[in-house]
Length: 382
Ligand code: FES
Ligand SMILES: [Fe+2]
Image (cartoon, rainbow, N blue to C red):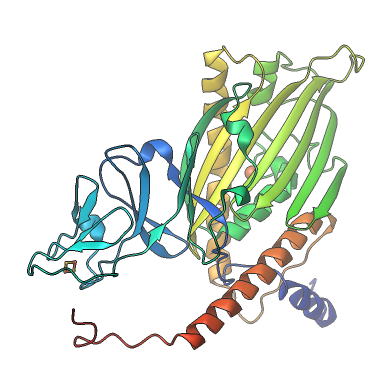
């Protein structure tokens, strides 16, 4: 019976201890997608983001607003209250908050305590995405991860969402090594030659990419039909799969006819923005925007690709759930080994862990400087 030697187990555990996993704290100082823009309107949308309970709504003027969901009076969820104009009224005793989260009315008294309220989170709206900043550092829109193609006219996009029962680090790792296309996606957009195709990793500070050239190959229907290469064995599938930020992974693929000379062959490009926003350590909001830069006026292609892709992404969502259930049960015997195609994801996980722990240490320092008082029914009477 094969048994992994203790030496290998120890080495694997040592390597694993430097890599982010489901127990790693979240990185708050990043822009994350809170919702699709069309999900947020004139009612209170409740969403848990990085463990924080948040409400989202739009003002009468259409501006998106994000506030902490916990009323500062007796912690009633504001999502159970209602919007009155641009203000939020708590559904318990009627405390009223404006768009900045400032308390502006206490119905039981004339005087409203000054300078108190719920936390307001900065929001940036870009095309179909609403980005939120939950961190302590300044919310600088220049720090948004690069995704401008989504709003460029060359790219025809469709979008979708999964509520994924798994940690966001596992999802990033899934996206950084597409070896799994030949197995997890064997019945959808994977092909048997994908796993063994040549690959290389690109490692930069905060950016990790795995590049794979699958040439020549036969494309699966989702790409073969729209590019007119059904059943054709001389296709090229050139893939760049890249971690751009804890909140964004982009897969960019080029297809062409490998039998044609380079100067003459048309190229077909698709991109997919995989956008994980941690909900809890065991669940993730998984937003997806998919686009192509060819046959933009062919509505059937948009619909066909969308339907086929989301069937395949469902396989990832199911796979991540299986994984999460195994990881939840991890005991003292737990170890995992990595192979060459994991290089980019190992570096990515080390990066997440280092950043997350540095941020957590800063949080601890801040808390030590400003000790939080235990809640008291007598404290803070205003
Ligand atoms: S709990 Fe919100 S007003 Fe009392
Ligand atoms: Fe996948």
